[in-house]
Length: 312
Ligand code: PA5
Image (cartoon, rainbow, N blue to C red):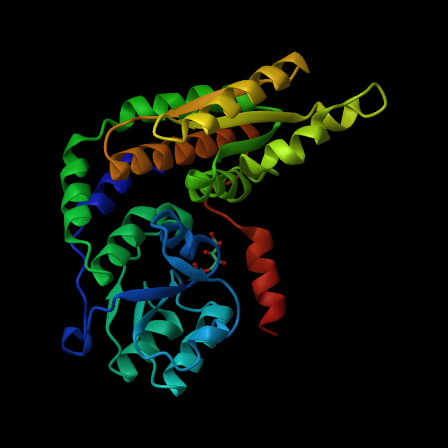
């Protein structure tokens, strides 16, 4: 993705339509699949990625249900939205169009229409973060993002992404982070899958120290299973010191077993700037890998194929 598109998202002013029907709620749940729930994960919002609604929400009128679908045509999200509509639960929509926006308009549901600028859902992370912050009334964070659209140095982050892609080339990346940064590690995995079209996995400390670590204790008969993996550690110096120590020790153990381990340092500025910087490095790394492998970063053929079959 071009840096200008990322910056444009950070600077873009989003509008709540049907605002007279909109009421801020103390709690919210986001309905969304794939690229359309990544922003909610990153903001630590509760997410429901399935058909229907979470069972404890059945009759709750004090929780805002935010249906997010970039295309507006994702069946699981539409299913939850329709159920909430039939139960008169408080709803809001974030979408570029499709059936979801049509239904929001027909039923006077508050909505934010994202501009359709021909990029993929996971690449609209800036728009999606801003739309969610707006619906959840986080004005300070919104202002910070708008300011960052002038301050953030994307060239430097892009270079980091390109360099990392060269190191990851020909390996299967496994991304490790603290549990606190799990949504970020997941974001990295997803962009490797969808943009670069490669397998990628993630896990978090300290849980992985109690199981996964042993899976890399290869011997001569299992070495060939392990040798395709490479590790990316997302290091955050605001993590619990014991987690930082565990990361250092795991890195040492893995290196002793002959694995390549690379670190991405999450800067210690504000949480939002740290988040956006890591998101952009992930996008740039996956984009560079797509170019290296000759994959089309914009296409998701298998996702589309599955959607076609299931809708028949
Ligand atoms: O990245 C993608 O293309 C997918 O993960 C989609 O986001 C997912 O299939 C859901 O579609 P939508 O975002 O249009 O609701």
